Structures are given as structure tokens and as C-alpha cells.
Length: 117
Image (cartoon, rainbow, N blue to C red; front, side, top):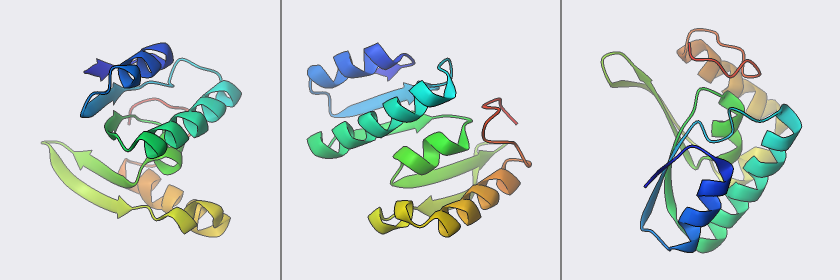
């Protein structure tokens, strides 16, 4: 199931799929709404124990939601892999460092821009 709208995500979880695929789910939202929905969605996914593949160009989406971040380069090669542990999200300095590593891996993109590199 591929989703690209926040309402669709809620409906998808209601039918109890084994895997949920999300494509730029929060990209059309303003920053504040996106941040709130990212936090809510991440909490729900962790509580119900679903596996989600979340495609995004927004660094904040990855840092706030993911347990594992993969950055791809053309042609379909993993150029950076990060594992996110629970305690990491509370460490602002470490999160800023990871944000910078990801930005460098995708060509210096600004996370707030949300546009592809």
C-alpha cells in the first residue's frame, strides 16, 4: 500500500497491513502541522509495531520518524545508512550532526526546503 496523504495513512493502519509504504506524506503541509503529524504518526507506528517504508526529501521527516535512514544515490546505491536509537532524538547536538551528515550526502540540501536534491 503506497500512501502520500496524511488521512490515507490513518486509513491504511486501520486495515492492519504488514507493510505501509509512504511517499512524501507530509510535504504539502506547513512546517508546524507537518511537525505535529510526524510526531503523532511516529508514535502510532511504534505503538502498533508496523513496518513503514517512508520516502522523503525532507531531512526532518527522516530524523523524527525513522529507526533507520538510507540515503540513495543514482543508480540506486546506498551512500549513507544511519540507525536511530531512542535516546538519540533527545540529543540536540547529535541530531544537528546527523542532519548535517545527511545534508552533505544529498548534496547540501536545506531540510526546510523539502525539495529534491
